[in-house]
Length: 392
Image (cartoon, rainbow, N blue to C red; front, side, top):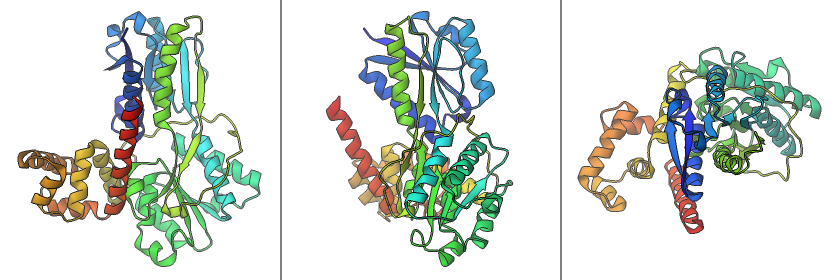
């Protein structure tokens, strides 16, 4: 018998990469397990039948998350919480924790195993809960390995990300590795014209960033990006809901996801054998609010990433054909779509990108996106979807 799984997500983050990946996994896993996903807001808790608990909660900011969990518990509704916070919230709340500190541990370990010894940390924001967790773990891991790292190796973000990246470029000579606090800063770093003149990536400088966003794969050189398996988190959430329904005597479960490194050209795709270290300590972390970066270049990077995340497969193919210089007739033939459909989709892309003409769109995209990388990404996605169809 098909049952419903209710999902409540924090509205602030619904367009982010990690949220999109979690929801994609939840929908796919639920369909495979013959469950219907119903997304509701935090104002619609009365719609949830008791038999449909636990409820999946996707949250990243602590006040919103705590308030919603308390409201659910006051209605005797159990929940499965996808969170970046290490915490013990008691009975009837299962937690799938995304271990932020483990990401920094993995990055430092990787640099050590690939014979990189001078690490810089770029775009650290001391006011960010996320960055503080990453920085604490990075400092402890460098100390454990006996690697040089102190406050002089930190290039802090004070509101102007372009200025922050430039400060590293001006002092980059002694470094053979850099860890960027986000893919946004990583993209800006590898595309910095002065750095390109001073350092060869990856020959002279390995670059790793956090996030594994789509743009990190499409920039040239592509970024090695350390991330948490958000897709796995969504899959586990669905399985936990079904397991807890079948086992009412079990009040909650606790799962910790570890980091993984997605290799790119910025570290020469160099792999290492293992990552033996356990997490150093439970670290509290949170996702920062959109609008975190205010300087024009950073906002441009974020805007392109938001555009990419808003497009479906056909929309991304339209971008690819435009970047490759296809004429309209070639685009229509290659995508098997009508001219009216193409015009409608293109106008939607213009609106999302905040432009009015193709030339404006291309001028914005060509700064950050390598067409060959986008082509490879779409080919890989097609292959993955074919494998999913075979399994189902």
